[in-house]
Amino acid sequence: METPRIRITVTVNGEAVSEDVPGDRSLLDFLRDDLGLTGTKEGCGEGECGACSVIVGGRLVDACLIFAAEADGRNVETVEGLADGEVLHPLQRAFAAAGAAQCGYCTPGMLMAGKALLDRNPSPTREEAAHGIAGNLCRCTGYGTIIQAVMEAAKES
Ligand code: FES
Ligand code: FES
Image (cartoon, rainbow, N blue to C red; front, side, top):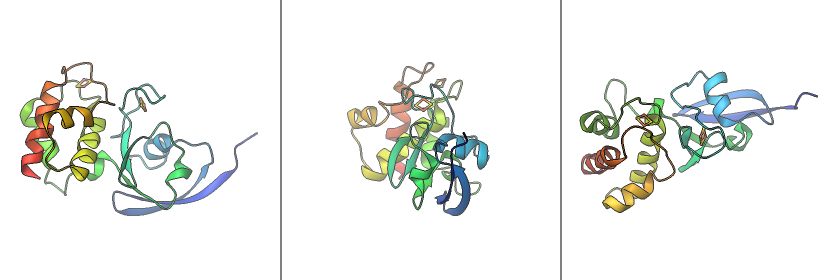
């Protein structure tokens, strides 16, 4: 039997969107498949890798682990909302400068983890920066350049 649909209104990167979604639709599928915001990546699909990290109501969440309906009435920030038009966010500039993106699959989630950290702690120590991205896995970089990029972005923010 099909899951009943629910009308939700979510503000995504500053824009209100209303959709009818099945009650069991994940926020990740809602963003990627319904809204076409494919910057947010699916890795494990079970809360282990952080590739799907977005910010909901100011908190970093794994979009694969929550229902779209749980975001009803809330603000959702995704990687697509980071840049201001043509102007990259300081984190995006710092990631590029530090070579913190290799294959790039983890990068959207890392950027959002970095943003969630800098939003609540604009001047993190290196340990705090490492802790801020601790829920996000990267197979390529060894994390050093990512932590360095978060520290550099903090200087600019
Ligand atoms: S895809 Fe969501 S945590 Fe891995
Ligand atoms: S850059 Fe490849 S997984 Fe992080």
